[in-house]
Length: 352
Image (cartoon, rainbow, N blue to C red):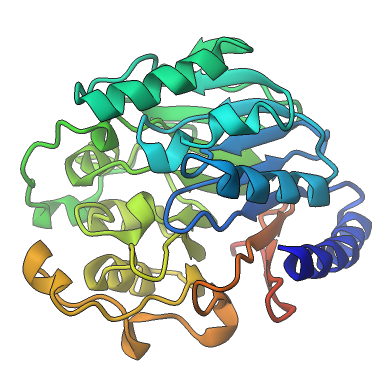
């Protein structure tokens, strides 16, 4: 991402300077890195400490992209790596990434539950790299101790928090329409989910958490409260994105970490678009129509003009580019989202 990195760096300098001047301190910087339908989200706190949530697919490609984002952010080490769950599109590049830069702390649910030969081999490669740092097993209610930033675990290993977060806990009327789906025994349902806060700003990342577990956070009471930024669960695929949770969270901005042919299903996309208070949905990729997927998933066809956000909110229009999305968040709850592909940026004022 040579051209993309240059544009990103220029946008970062201008925006960070403007935000810092307005607030009297550095903002929280967030890079939603394009790993083609996996996840890799780099956060840099105002203190300069870094948190990498997931690391994309195995191999050099995604390690290169994470390293490029870290360079743009002025990060020379990862202070905390948080793995949401043990699937290859979320932790695959770690054995390669640790050869590029130090990773000091590894946070995850502990050990893999899936038993296939491929899953176990991938986990063992990750565990070998994890042994190079300090390992922390995430439990519901735990915090990740990043200076100047709140990072609270709201679910891990299939167990949600049992008490509502501060300001949350109200009965959720949306639960009356909830229908449970089949029990999911995969790693997705064991995802580590976190709430990130800086002052009034709140962001949620639930990894690939699936429908039933999402609803345990939302029903009968909303244990999380509201957020400013929602990273779409499970890349915007069906089986996640329960309206009882998404609409209760009332995000003002949503980001879909999809690929051209993965994620951003009709139902999940429309759930985000119709969420109360939503201002914009941003995407890492234009979602392509996929006839046949509808029959396979017993759902409507994803992708196409009506099931994508506006062009200026999409980081990559095809698979020939690898632009991230860049977010700067202030303690007053306001944020700016930037698209390095076209230089488009939009500012969102604090919640009223």
